Image 1 (cartoon, rainbow over the protein chains, first blue to last red):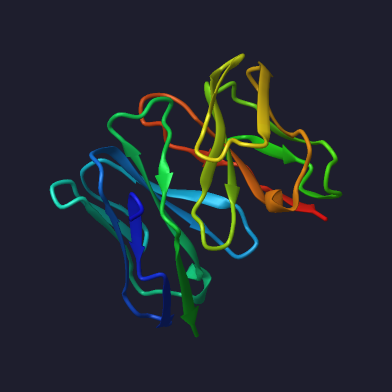
Image 2 (image 1 turned 180 degrees about the vertical axis):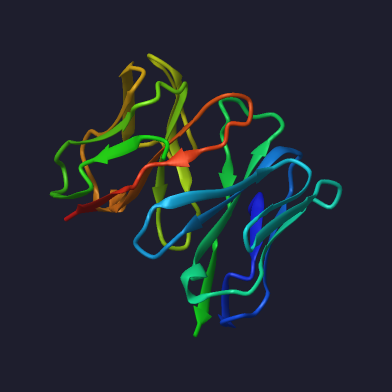
Length: 111
Length: 112
């Protein structure tokens, strides 16, 4: 079992739908990172959080430390949201900020 | 923009040849990382650096070496490239107490 599990692996939605991507992890962490990667593109940081909730535009990230779970929500999804969304965790016992990455969730939003 | 560049952006090389990839940052941040990204796998850490001449191995370091002689440059070397090292390589940097990582644009390496 990987330290970081994302679900679903693939997700197809219609434009305007509310999207939820989940990330579960098995170790104690000091922070969790959500990243976005467009097809053929680079990797962009969306959120870094260690508790609670963060919001940026139509994106919302939440984390429940006790349940070792985080969710990324996209409201009013748009075709330009189509990308791979990656969850990464930094464990409490790591040094130099090393992180463990999930395999990513591929989101396709159809017009 | 965290000021990270990678060179080359694309490279095709033959099995057995040495290859060096360069990661350059403009902000003199302390931590730098090399990852590889392959279908079916998440980003996997090859090597990382926590200062000039201070480097350590990641989870997939076999066949790779690194050097950091200046704060701004982190070099990844494949001493003798193999087809299993065909991949997309990403460099990342981080700093401070949050260690939030910022990624370079990636290098697509094909070993034939």
